[in-house]
Image 1 (cartoon, one colour):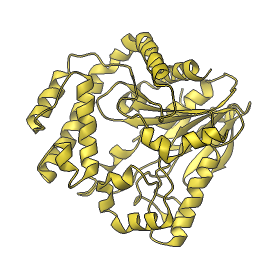
Image 2 (tube, one colour):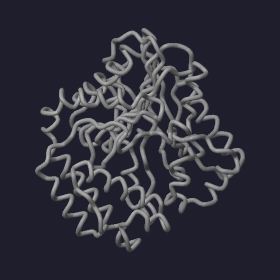
Image 3 (tube, one colour):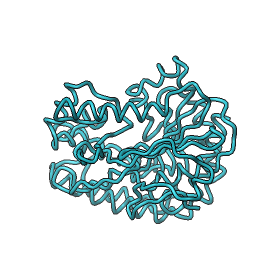
Length: 359
């Protein structure tokens, strides 16, 4: 069942009439939408704007904000802005700061948008908050710094999050944020991130339980999933090798920490499938990628590829929990291919995980 409108790349555009039978709008602006269920137990927040700091339209109020990062101080945002577009090659900025700015006025406007977004997450009222921080359209033109900008979009995440909120009929007894993301790397179909605040053993136990329940069904798209990864990874690795002259993450960190991070995630994903990368040559990567063709795809991992510990610290989740403004939070990274082609499967798995952990 489709409950949201998404473009051909999977970017969130808005909800449909079916969704509004169960949810009422709370706010709609150029950067995000907020909806609450009529019983007030579910909240759905979908981002419409780009996560990339230089992909924006200031005149319309559509800002480049990564809502899954910390609000910078004024001088940090101004320095970030001064270093664009080359700052896109640095995890110093991308992994930590929500936005860049060129003036105090621009900083204030973006700060207000960031704070408004989180005003819908922090509260004392029991509620399940389903949020997609990276579901907005990316319109940045490809260049030598970011040759495939649409890969930065968490495609089709809003559709699944809306389905989860719509289908979750449980009465909320605590306030929980569930952040839905999408990835194009080789990994389990779902990767659970505990934000550094969740019991790791409990998270691993739930992951194992869901793995057993859904393993067989999840293999239906396994070959297509691996082929999609093969094409994306080969394209990306070839580009980085040609531009940087190396695929060694440690060496890449001297010129582009962002590229080093991307290669590191590919290495880590291959390791999950038993493929160790040692020489970091393009040929070794291709051989390792080809070697996973006959392997089954794991369904759920926990705190492996995207543990979200850094984000938990940036957002001050432990402090918010201490203040009573949140009881817990979970980040769920989902395969983009499965999000697009098996949204019902992903929704069922996510709801099972939510029920095991929080209900």
